[in-house]
Amino acid sequence: MAAGVPRIFVSHLSGVPVFDPNGDQVGRVRDLVAMLRVGRRPPRLLGLVVELSTRRRIFLPMTRVTSIESGQVIATGVFNVRRFEQRPTERLVFGELLDLRVTLVETGEEVTVLDLSVQQLPARRDWEIDRVFVRKGKRASAFRRARGETLTVEWSAVTGFSLEEHGQGAESLLATFEQLRPADLANVLHHLSAKRRAEVAAALDDDRLADVLEELPEDDQIEILGKLKEERAADVLEAMDPDDAADLLAELPEADQERLLSLMQPEDAADMRRLMSYEEHTAGGLMTTEPIVLRPDATVADALARVRNPDLSPALAAQVYVCRPPDETPTGKYLGTVHFQRLLREPPYTLVSAVLDDDLQALDPEAALPVVAGFFATYDMVAAPVVDEAGSLLGAVTVDDVLDHMLPEDWRETEFHLDEETADGAEVAPHGS
Image (cartoon, rainbow, N blue to C red):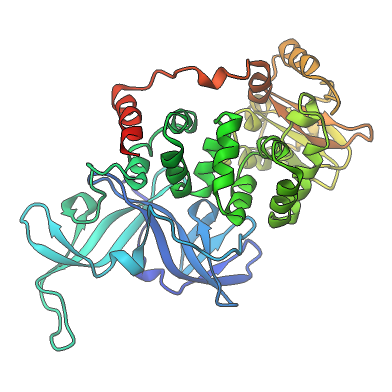
């Protein structure tokens, strides 16, 4: 691990308060959720189980955690207050991993797990369980206090945690395919049996499943969504890009649409309804409602901080849109665009309003797909603003969305050239169904 990256022992997180960005306490940490991997690879830390003041326990993804320090956790974004439900591939750190008997690889000696340390990977938002604090000797009992040497070892120095490599269940498949890009995992899922596809989809976390659904053919999307519990289906739709989620919702019966929309956060549901009001092959139907929007008094430093968000696609991070308040779509008056390259050339204190590209024509929400494609080809753009008659920014269209709609409907059926190991895994999986 790189120097300067803090290591935190999980025992120090038990019961610590969790605060939102405004400094208000929302609950306390009651457990950590990890996903074990095949072999001796360190587990990935997925999130925290947070107990609210109402005693309800919810799941807080690590992607929403901005800081763990000084006996507190600070999170960002909207909290999903649905009750936490553990999934097949998940392990509760306090509830299942602590006090477990494992074996030291070097000596074959059985030891007891007393604590685990977690560390954030450098330059990423992922967290891993990297070390194990253990005690040698027999387990303590009601009549005997535990004695024995204690030591901290690397995760790979013990065995007894990891998934069995020979397993062919959804749990093992998920660990095997963890490193695949969403498009490649979607290709693997597409070629699994319906039963195995549903098992793997159910085991994926919401963000990962959302990314994969965006890469799947429409029939597979509908099939997978239909097999999820309705509350979880709504969560996954919220995690998808708004335009992709709206396209998927539009393919469902109206009654199903309304049920899912009623379970979503009101802001997300409003975005979905707005996107679904446009024809599919228009700028309004193609756009996302979540571009980077800044007010004219924001600085270049503010813009670059927003661009660095790892959850943004490269196309959306290529430029920011400057608008009068309000700065949520639909915004106040759209003033212009600032391109990423221009941001890199300006001093950090420069106002974005001073470096606007206000000559670039915006797209009308009713503009047809050929017009949108011609716009991208003419101006060599990777994203473009969509503005209504009142001059408000409605969203942005990205070049990947244009390509998705211009390619033949069966383009996703094309065989991808995966490496031999992955191809073997995809081929073996259906036989174990």
